[in-house]
Amino acid sequence: MDYVITIPSYNRFSTILGRTLKFLLSHNIDMNKVYIFAHPFSYDEYKIIEQKIEGVKVIESKGGIMHSRNYITEYFNEGTNIVSIDDDVEELIDLNTNQPINDLDGFIKESFSMCGNGLWGVCALTNKFYSNMKDKFGLQSIVATFCGYVNIKSIVLTLDVCEDHERVIKYYQSNKTVLKRSWVGIKTKYWKTAGGLQTELDCLKRIQLQNFCASELKKRYPEYVFHRTRKSGLIDIRFKRNI
Image 1 (cartoon, rainbow, N blue to C red):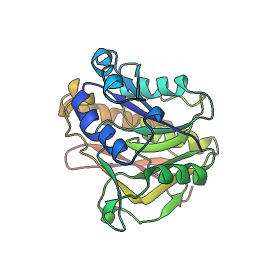
Image 2: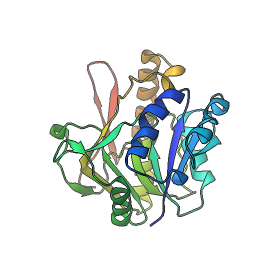
Image 3: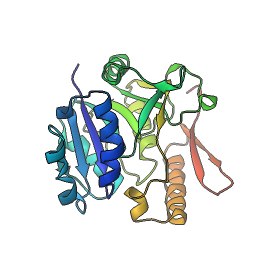
Image 4: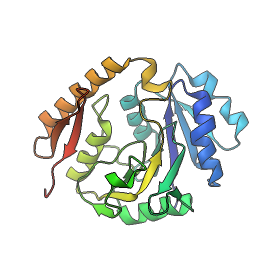
């Protein structure tokens, strides 16, 4: 089973080399599968990566994560198996052993085989307290930090953040399989790594944007989602069960 790996990135040249690409190389992933979709402002800097790591391709993308994810959809053929990875992912952890998964290529291929024509993902955290440690099918959170999906060009994202929740809903509405491999977690630093969206927005503005998009998502899909608000004021999206 063939697949491509896409990494949207902005202003994280050192981070993507020291984390995500290092992670992929440590698992002996074929670098010919890897496409970095660089923000136009970062493209010239990122292009050097093609000289540093043979096989990697750097593509000039669009500004903003939603636009970049949609550009990736446009770039690849219908039906392409796409693995999307954020540019600061350090490892995937098997929560049963608290160790890195043994065979990343095998895990990716197995996940695509299990989800068929749909979407799959893993647990956002490496703390098994937040996981049921199972493979689960149905409407549920799939974070874009590390996920895979069969490319469907008609599915277009419209929210600047919460776009990963929007993708889940649109795949679910299209009667595509949604699979969460909850026994695997992502080692990364959410909201803490310099660069990326943080380059353009401070913490307060990020919360405001998150809350606006979360409210918009609930307005559009009240039958699927509800809200929970943290002490910080940040609104979290939750999917309803038994739909």
